[in-house]
Length: 404
Ligand SMILES: Cc1ncc(COP(=O)(O)O)c(C=O)c1O
Image 1 (cartoon, helix red, strand yellow):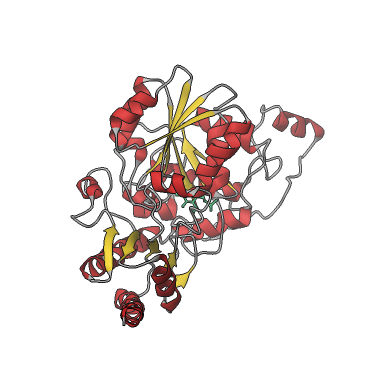
Image 2 (cartoon, protein in one colour):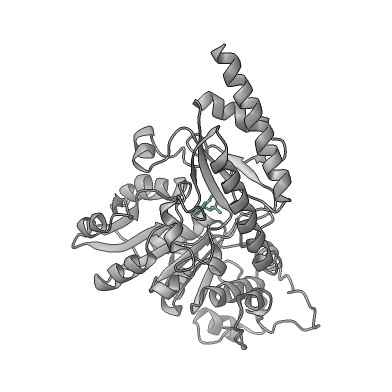
């Protein structure tokens, strides 16, 4: 861990995790863009491989730039250690597969990011790992899913893309009571808005592609947990499957993290105003954003989560075709998947991020064909709203013409 403890997360984002490997005193973290590290002697190389001497060997096994990122995010989440990965999916795969084996059972939320669902539903079956997908807002359903061979429980909250909020206290307690490893994907809120470790969650992971980096120029992930569990991940599914992060990407995320606190504040403020605008617009049906009083997740604000985050979703009063037309009319909002960037992004989950689900599976997960997701960016909120307004007006005019 970093030598100094800071009481405010804003300061942790900037100063935590310094490894002390900075021979010239550079202010910015040095980028160790190297694949391998030279040993002083054959004896030293052997000692490092044997784990008898600390020091770097080869970047797939560890790198000083990557290490700073890991220590920083571990400090932010309030946990002992972290392992950075090549992508968010690298984190999901490494964190789960390090602990599950043939014959084990996993309880997963029925609504999760599309590729996490694909990994559990399609790949795990090939390796003999059984998965029950459960509505985790229903605590009885979680209890009923428990089997003698259940080893792990996996969820994300708020859920992508429905923004359903799950009760972390219940999940943490349930896992402890039944000796399960609990894993929470904290991508949507970041440790600044939600700290699953406070509820006894064992492993927390992120697609660092999103808010942690925040600039849309990296794909990466990170897993946070106890020293013991992170060491197991590093020595098994990371070392041998190899989804380790590039030091350059780690360096970019360290840079991005310096502004995480101010970015999250603006993302949340903008998303709240956009959600309120959409909720009041006659062309919009339901708006899904936990910052709205009408959302069932609102009761968790100020408790489990400090604020509602920067992502929202909504249903248009219209057909799938109207939805496509509306998205195509947006000029400032970019039609793109991903989230957490400075740019506002708009996408259609059923045909994009959640297309690994079949139509029935999407229905079960509450992802309708008309659902549209926005990652509200850092532009001036009036410009974001103006763009949505003009696209909605054009869609309404087209609907009128179709009726006539
Ligand atoms: C909640 C969540 N978890 C995991 C991932 C996977 O991350 P990556 O795209 O960095 O592999 C995503 C990607 O959108 C996501 O939204």
